[in-house]
Amino acid sequence: MLAFLIRRLLQGAAVLLVVAFGAFLLFQFVGDPVLQVLGTEATPQQRQALRAELGLDQPVPVQFARFVGQALQGDFGISLRQGRPVATLLAERLPATLELAGLAAVLALLLGIPLGAYAAVRRGRPLAEAVMALSLLGVSVPTFLIGIVLILLFAVLLPWLPSFGRGEVVALGGWTTGLLSADGWRHLLLPAVTLAVFQLALVLRLVRAEMLEVLQRDHIRFARARGLPEGRILLRHALPNTLVPVITVVGLQLGSLIAFSIVTETVFQWPGLGLLFIQAVQFSDIPVMAAYLCLIGAVFVAINLVVDLLYAAVDPRLGWRGTTA
Image (cartoon, rainbow, N blue to C red; front, side):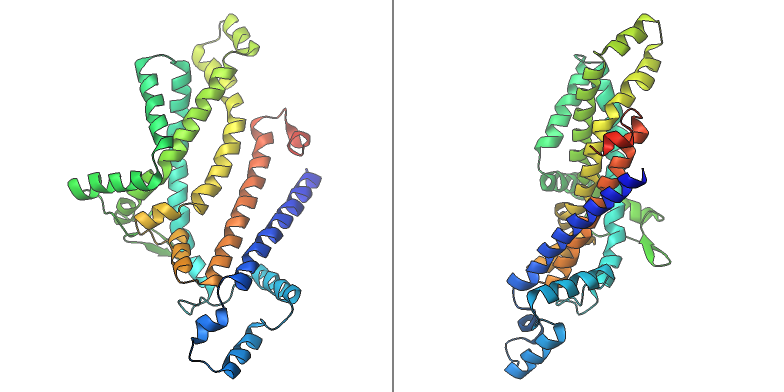
């Protein structure tokens, strides 16, 4: 197990180094930070002084090593647009994105797994076919369109829920959460449902496909021949065998929820990392863009590591040897 963890950590470190290099290239090819800070009215002497202060007059390998060293300490510089430390901006926006992605993932799992199992067990029944039709709609309709339709229904025609913002939040030390206030929940529901629809449909269809395959296996037939209750067969012998591929997809999709919540956060003006990144792109705020890429890379690496660890927990036959293959 220790060797497996060390190997996975080294692989993750290599991936993060590649991501950091990609983020570093933004400083080389996307605009001129000195020009953005000082403007066009600055003198050549002022530009040269700032370039030396930022270390931009150093060779590229030295600049990259300095960038990695500062990133490891959580120092991504100052936002060119807001004039504040990038790490502070990320820390302020991170709770909103994690709450949004977390609730969307919970909705997708709590509804997707049982509905997928039902669609497989009751295959051909009208309600099961209706579930599959809705899931096809869920994977086909763009996320932004789902958000607009929900805003039209629940914020305009039926003014039950707000259409933008995060609402009232509660401060817990350095963390802010809207989960402890009714207004926070009202603001969270529409964007969370919007973000969850695609994931829910994906999980549902995956669970159904895996369940249909598992139900045809010999150990299920033997269990039925022994006279075991159908519910026990489904819960103890069929459903666990469908979870390994589900864990893989859900793990990767959880990273996608965080990384690609940009559209949902933009539609609902949700003050999370996605909206911060969009604003950074609009103003060529390179330090924020680079920090966002590094953070998302770290999230994907961490999630993949957790997914690998869960393999052995769900299916002991795989074990640590199987997960290292």
